[in-house]
Image (cartoon, rainbow, N blue to C red; front, side, top):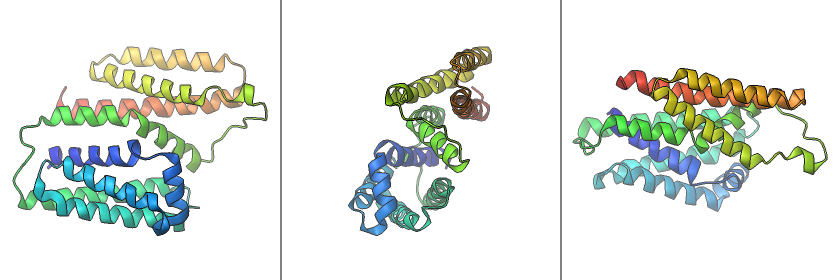
Length: 234
Protein backbone atom coordinates (compact mmCIF):
# COMPACT_ATOMS: atom_id res chain seq x y z
CA UNK A 1 0.00 0.00 0.00
CA UNK A 2 2.68 2.53 1.01
CA UNK A 3 4.86 1.74 -2.00
CA UNK A 4 1.95 2.16 -4.40
CA UNK A 5 0.76 5.30 -2.63
CA UNK A 6 4.23 6.88 -2.90
CA UNK A 7 4.24 6.22 -6.64
CA UNK A 8 0.86 7.88 -7.05
CA UNK A 9 1.98 10.89 -5.01
CA UNK A 10 5.00 11.12 -7.31
CA UNK A 11 2.62 11.02 -10.29
CA UNK A 12 0.58 13.83 -8.73
CA UNK A 13 3.73 15.85 -7.97
CA UNK A 14 4.94 15.55 -11.55
CA UNK A 15 1.61 16.44 -13.14
CA UNK A 16 0.54 19.17 -10.73
CA UNK A 17 3.87 20.93 -10.14
CA UNK A 18 6.33 20.10 -12.92
CA UNK A 19 4.08 19.74 -15.97
CA UNK A 20 2.09 22.96 -15.66
CA UNK A 21 3.11 26.59 -15.38
CA UNK A 22 1.76 29.75 -13.77
CA UNK A 23 -0.14 30.78 -16.92
CA UNK A 24 -1.94 27.46 -17.01
CA UNK A 25 -2.87 27.73 -13.32
CA UNK A 26 -4.11 31.31 -13.77
CA UNK A 27 -6.21 30.32 -16.78
CA UNK A 28 -7.80 27.45 -14.86
CA UNK A 29 -8.49 29.63 -11.83
CA UNK A 30 -10.13 32.30 -13.97
CA UNK A 31 -12.16 30.20 -16.42
CA UNK A 32 -12.87 26.96 -14.59
CA UNK A 33 -14.66 24.43 -16.80
CA UNK A 34 -14.23 26.76 -19.80
CA UNK A 35 -10.44 26.58 -19.65
CA UNK A 36 -8.84 24.38 -22.37
CA UNK A 37 -5.70 24.16 -20.23
CA UNK A 38 -7.75 22.45 -17.52
CA UNK A 39 -8.53 19.49 -19.76
CA UNK A 40 -4.94 19.25 -20.97
CA UNK A 41 -3.80 19.18 -17.35
CA UNK A 42 -6.36 16.51 -16.45
CA UNK A 43 -5.20 14.36 -19.37
CA UNK A 44 -1.61 14.67 -18.12
CA UNK A 45 -2.81 13.74 -14.62
CA UNK A 46 -4.50 10.62 -15.99
CA UNK A 47 -1.43 9.55 -17.97
CA UNK A 48 0.96 10.07 -15.04
CA UNK A 49 -1.28 8.15 -12.62
CA UNK A 50 -1.75 5.29 -15.07
CA UNK A 51 1.92 5.00 -16.05
CA UNK A 52 3.22 5.03 -12.49
CA UNK A 53 0.76 2.33 -11.45
CA UNK A 54 2.72 -0.14 -13.60
CA UNK A 55 -0.58 -1.89 -14.28
CA UNK A 56 -2.74 -1.73 -17.40
CA UNK A 57 -5.87 -2.46 -15.36
CA UNK A 58 -5.34 0.65 -13.27
CA UNK A 59 -6.72 2.79 -16.11
CA UNK A 60 -10.19 3.07 -14.57
CA UNK A 61 -8.76 4.16 -11.19
CA UNK A 62 -6.55 6.69 -12.96
CA UNK A 63 -9.67 7.90 -14.74
CA UNK A 64 -11.41 8.44 -11.39
CA UNK A 65 -8.37 10.32 -10.05
CA UNK A 66 -8.33 12.50 -13.19
CA UNK A 67 -12.10 13.13 -13.06
CA UNK A 68 -12.00 14.26 -9.44
CA UNK A 69 -8.94 16.35 -10.26
CA UNK A 70 -10.97 18.02 -13.00
CA UNK A 71 -13.83 18.75 -10.62
CA UNK A 72 -11.63 20.14 -7.83
CA UNK A 73 -9.52 22.31 -10.13
CA UNK A 74 -12.56 23.67 -11.98
CA UNK A 75 -14.36 24.60 -8.77
CA UNK A 76 -11.32 26.54 -7.55
CA UNK A 77 -12.38 29.48 -9.71
CA UNK A 78 -15.39 29.96 -7.43
CA UNK A 79 -13.19 30.11 -4.34
CA UNK A 80 -10.26 32.06 -5.76
CA UNK A 81 -10.55 34.69 -3.00
CA UNK A 82 -9.89 32.11 -0.31
CA UNK A 83 -6.26 32.53 0.68
CA UNK A 84 -6.02 28.87 1.69
CA UNK A 85 -7.41 27.51 -1.57
CA UNK A 86 -4.07 26.06 -2.68
CA UNK A 87 -3.74 23.95 0.47
CA UNK A 88 -7.39 22.88 0.36
CA UNK A 89 -6.93 21.90 -3.29
CA UNK A 90 -3.84 19.82 -2.57
CA UNK A 91 -5.44 18.18 0.46
CA UNK A 92 -8.47 17.11 -1.59
CA UNK A 93 -6.23 15.68 -4.32
CA UNK A 94 -4.22 13.70 -1.76
CA UNK A 95 -7.37 12.36 -0.09
CA UNK A 96 -8.61 11.08 -3.44
CA UNK A 97 -5.24 9.45 -4.15
CA UNK A 98 -5.15 7.74 -0.73
CA UNK A 99 -8.69 6.38 -1.12
CA UNK A 100 -8.02 5.23 -4.69
CA UNK A 101 -4.81 3.43 -3.67
CA UNK A 102 -6.53 1.79 -0.71
CA UNK A 103 -9.40 0.46 -2.82
CA UNK A 104 -7.03 -0.70 -5.57
CA UNK A 105 -4.71 -2.55 -3.20
CA UNK A 106 -7.60 -4.34 -1.51
CA UNK A 107 -8.66 -6.07 -4.72
CA UNK A 108 -5.53 -6.19 -6.86
CA UNK A 109 -2.13 -7.90 -6.70
CA UNK A 110 0.96 -5.94 -5.76
CA UNK A 111 2.22 -4.94 -9.21
CA UNK A 112 5.14 -2.87 -7.87
CA UNK A 113 6.59 -5.50 -5.56
CA UNK A 114 9.98 -5.38 -7.29
CA UNK A 115 10.50 -1.70 -6.52
CA UNK A 116 12.31 -0.78 -3.31
CA UNK A 117 10.06 1.41 -1.18
CA UNK A 118 12.97 3.35 0.32
CA UNK A 119 14.20 4.42 -3.11
CA UNK A 120 10.70 5.54 -4.12
CA UNK A 121 10.48 7.63 -0.93
CA UNK A 122 13.90 9.16 -1.61
CA UNK A 123 12.84 10.04 -5.16
CA UNK A 124 9.70 11.71 -3.83
CA UNK A 125 11.80 13.59 -1.27
CA UNK A 126 14.13 14.95 -3.94
CA UNK A 127 11.18 15.95 -6.13
CA UNK A 128 9.49 17.82 -3.27
CA UNK A 129 12.72 19.76 -2.66
CA UNK A 130 12.62 21.10 -6.21
CA UNK A 131 9.79 23.16 -7.74
CA UNK A 132 6.98 22.06 -5.36
CA UNK A 133 8.72 23.63 -2.37
CA UNK A 134 9.10 26.95 -4.20
CA UNK A 135 5.37 26.97 -4.95
CA UNK A 136 4.38 25.92 -1.42
CA UNK A 137 6.53 28.66 0.13
CA UNK A 138 5.00 31.24 -2.22
CA UNK A 139 1.51 30.11 -1.21
CA UNK A 140 2.41 30.28 2.49
CA UNK A 141 3.52 33.90 1.99
CA UNK A 142 0.27 34.63 0.18
CA UNK A 143 -1.84 32.99 2.90
CA UNK A 144 0.01 34.91 5.62
CA UNK A 145 -0.18 38.22 3.70
CA UNK A 146 3.60 38.53 3.79
CA UNK A 147 5.06 40.66 1.04
CA UNK A 148 7.82 43.19 0.52
CA UNK A 149 7.56 46.52 -1.29
CA UNK A 150 9.71 46.15 -4.37
CA UNK A 151 9.66 49.83 -5.14
CA UNK A 152 9.75 51.32 -8.61
CA UNK A 153 13.35 50.90 -9.73
CA UNK A 154 13.46 47.67 -11.70
CA UNK A 155 17.24 47.71 -11.82
CA UNK A 156 17.49 47.54 -8.04
CA UNK A 157 14.45 45.51 -7.06
CA UNK A 158 14.50 42.44 -9.23
CA UNK A 159 17.41 40.72 -7.56
CA UNK A 160 17.31 37.88 -10.09
CA UNK A 161 14.13 36.11 -8.88
CA UNK A 162 14.95 33.00 -10.90
CA UNK A 163 18.36 32.89 -9.24
CA UNK A 164 16.59 33.07 -5.88
CA UNK A 165 14.47 30.06 -6.80
CA UNK A 166 17.59 28.16 -7.86
CA UNK A 167 19.33 29.04 -4.60
CA UNK A 168 16.33 27.74 -2.70
CA UNK A 169 16.37 24.47 -4.62
CA UNK A 170 20.10 23.96 -4.07
CA UNK A 171 19.90 24.72 -0.34
CA UNK A 172 17.00 22.28 0.08
CA UNK A 173 18.75 19.53 -1.83
CA UNK A 174 21.91 20.01 0.24
CA UNK A 175 19.92 20.06 3.48
CA UNK A 176 17.98 16.95 2.45
CA UNK A 177 21.18 15.05 1.67
CA UNK A 178 22.92 16.24 4.86
CA UNK A 179 19.93 15.13 6.97
CA UNK A 180 19.97 11.69 5.35
CA UNK A 181 23.70 11.48 6.09
CA UNK A 182 23.17 12.65 9.66
CA UNK A 183 25.26 15.79 9.10
CA UNK A 184 22.99 18.21 10.96
CA UNK A 185 25.91 20.54 11.73
CA UNK A 186 26.33 21.20 8.00
CA UNK A 187 22.65 22.16 7.73
CA UNK A 188 23.07 24.61 10.62
CA UNK A 189 26.14 26.11 8.99
CA UNK A 190 24.27 26.73 5.71
CA UNK A 191 21.34 28.36 7.54
CA UNK A 192 23.65 30.62 9.58
CA UNK A 193 25.78 31.60 6.58
CA UNK A 194 22.82 32.55 4.41
CA UNK A 195 21.06 34.42 7.21
CA UNK A 196 24.15 36.51 7.99
CA UNK A 197 24.65 37.27 4.30
CA UNK A 198 21.08 38.49 3.86
CA UNK A 199 20.99 40.66 6.97
CA UNK A 200 24.28 42.25 5.92
CA UNK A 201 22.54 43.73 2.87
CA UNK A 202 20.97 46.52 4.94
CA UNK A 203 17.34 46.39 3.75
CA UNK A 204 15.61 45.15 6.90
CA UNK A 205 12.18 44.50 5.37
CA UNK A 206 13.60 42.61 2.44
CA UNK A 207 16.06 40.73 4.66
CA UNK A 208 13.24 39.58 6.94
CA UNK A 209 11.19 38.54 3.92
CA UNK A 210 14.04 36.44 2.56
CA UNK A 211 14.85 35.07 6.02
CA UNK A 212 11.30 33.77 6.43
CA UNK A 213 11.52 32.14 3.02
CA UNK A 214 14.88 30.64 3.92
CA UNK A 215 13.60 29.20 7.19
CA UNK A 216 10.54 27.73 5.44
CA UNK A 217 12.79 26.30 2.75
CA UNK A 218 15.10 24.59 5.23
CA UNK A 219 12.19 23.45 7.38
CA UNK A 220 10.60 21.64 4.46
CA UNK A 221 13.84 19.93 3.46
CA UNK A 222 14.67 18.94 7.04
CA UNK A 223 11.14 17.67 7.73
CA UNK A 224 11.09 15.51 4.59
CA UNK A 225 14.60 14.20 5.26
CA UNK A 226 13.95 13.39 8.92
CA UNK A 227 10.61 11.74 8.12
CA UNK A 228 12.20 9.42 5.54
CA UNK A 229 15.21 8.75 7.75
CA UNK A 230 13.11 7.81 10.78
CA UNK A 231 10.48 5.80 8.90
CA UNK A 232 13.00 3.68 6.99
CA UNK A 233 15.78 3.69 9.56
CA UNK A 234 18.33 5.08 7.12
